[in-house]
Length: 232
Image 1 (tube, helix red, strand yellow):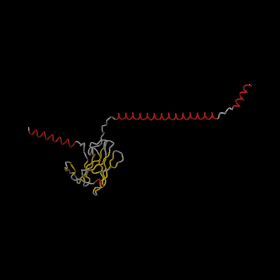
Image 2 (cartoon, one colour):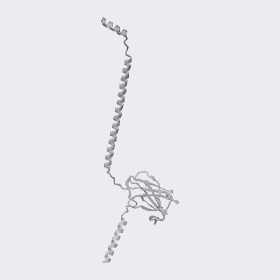
Image 3 (spheres, one colour):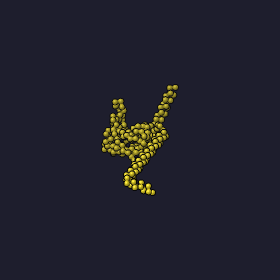
Image 4 (spheres, rainbow, N blue to C red):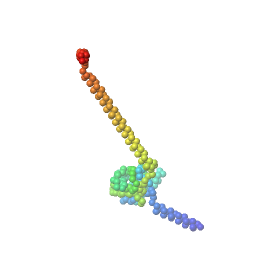
């Protein structure tokens, strides 16, 4: 009975080990030996999502393996390569877009670890290009996300739905157009009102001029007209 139990436990352990070995990690980084150094590359935040802040996560170890130790309760690299940001450069590319230069910086309290922040805006595979020199050794390596390296960016669920956002945008656009039309109508009315006032003032001025130019009738003329009317 004990032998059967032992064999059963051993079989479960073997099956679990096989499952772990054959299932790709969702939080994987690519580890690569580059000359006398080891580079570990991936996204800072994994899984990575489009339109969510992320960045390049780079670890550089001295030797063909990265050793770790505990320091103040934190797991840190025991054989780090420090100050690499002074001689290395990095850029990121996606699809057919032009590569974008990244600002590589050392991570505080994590010797041998470096980061470069950016906002991935598309889903799919990204490539990190790291180049320059490291203690006299030329470095020119590209790391591309994929099933056997590190995770690609995924679509992030949105809320509220895009249809709601679209409707809201359409409503705002319609309201803006209505305001513009109202402003245009008010401007037209103001212009017409001013024109009417100008025309009215012009009429008053012309009437005043005509009145002042009307010939005056003297008393002699009036008497003469009266006599002529009596004769007639």
